[in-house]
Image (tube, rainbow over all chains, first blue to last red; front, side):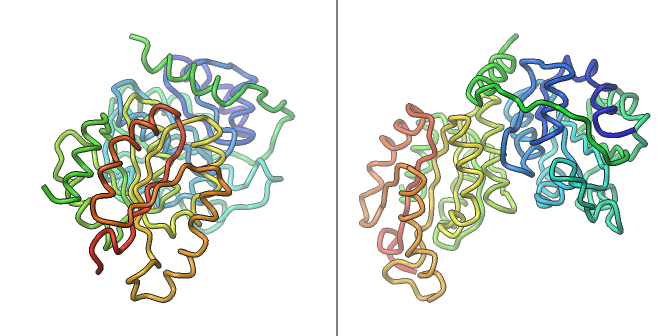
Length: 185
Length: 165
């Protein structure tokens, strides 16, 4: 399974949550598979999906799922101590770990070599860290949602990409409709 | 009321409830005052672009954010300011210690100081400079302006303003 297979599998679960989706192909894939107003698509700024998601989670009560990648987490590794030390039980960080920088041509990341992001997250103090295989991602994500505990999921999958169109939406439209969903009672 | 307490009181008056900080000796008093203010969630960040991501999220979650950092951070955050804060039109007051100005004892700080205003100008970021004691009287208006126009706004505070090191 590759990242787009995981996103296709979990799209029905994500539909009812606030989602912050990582720059590049992950956002383009989710946008193509199941565009929702409750998804904040990152059009730029590699590495900040987890930071943006944690900020949303700390500011209000609804559950937030940040979809991130191994390469993006490595870009902003300082996020893991911040997450560990600012517990928001309405926050789930889903790292889709394909061991490569998918959006830029599948160059290998260190997470696909000696570095375990699962071990890093635990060492940073994150209390609920679950590593799973791609096929288990939906089950693990649903369990994390049901637990109502802040959870970091590292879903291991193969590298590879499908052809997807870019997101033509204006950033302010993406932001505005996301904020409308945040405020919806 | 100290200058640091006045700054945080203006934050509170303007509904700021989420503040991220990256430490600077010059802003230590403000960071302490933020930490002591019960209506503000203080979340230290490890790097300023991470902090701007947190602030973007907090804003979309319904809380007014602010970031406190050194001017060296302008060198770190250009991409985030442009592709997140500005591209999505989000407000962000940035209270910045303007290191490398008059009374600066550390030569290396000057190297970033000479680029600070040029970079902010290049990024079309409204920039205010607190140089003399009393300049903080403008902060309330600057914060109102920031949340009116949904832009990142820089407030540079130098050593002369803070009374030296």
